[in-house]
Length: 220
Image (cartoon, rainbow, N blue to C red; front, top):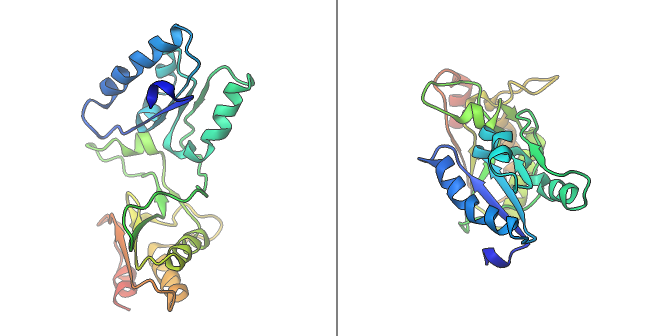
């Protein structure tokens, strides 16, 4: 029940129509309750939080934490800093932060699972807001991705979909040794043989970076 909750988290998506207006409509009643003395923490998370940043605090000063999607794993720490009095308010929207989320995500299917391999995007297509709300491309390590896939296999999953705004750009940012998406596919295939996973899929591809090595990796 929202009225009885100690913490209310509004997780937002900029891609949807009128996202900002809908957010402010939800924040209005929550703000009014805090002005009347209600002890309740308000967190605005996700892409609208990343996009609006301090403007949200300026318009609704009753908000306690504004954080981009990359800060979800740190929500507890950010809230603690506010509730303990260390900080009055927190705006966490550094687009370059990449934090491995160690929490088990909620899976809505018994045998198929999504696995993030790449966050953000560098393309800046004229019609797309993603680079401005999710930041620059940041690849997870191959070892981290493998570990998640192995855990899924042990839990009975039979198919994983590797997820990124532009999966073909995977690894360009990994330093010192750059990797490619083909390298990732080959690596996962080698280490997941016999694990129980029967299929590895991926979305979304960009034709600029789709290479013959990816075709060969899929074929083999």
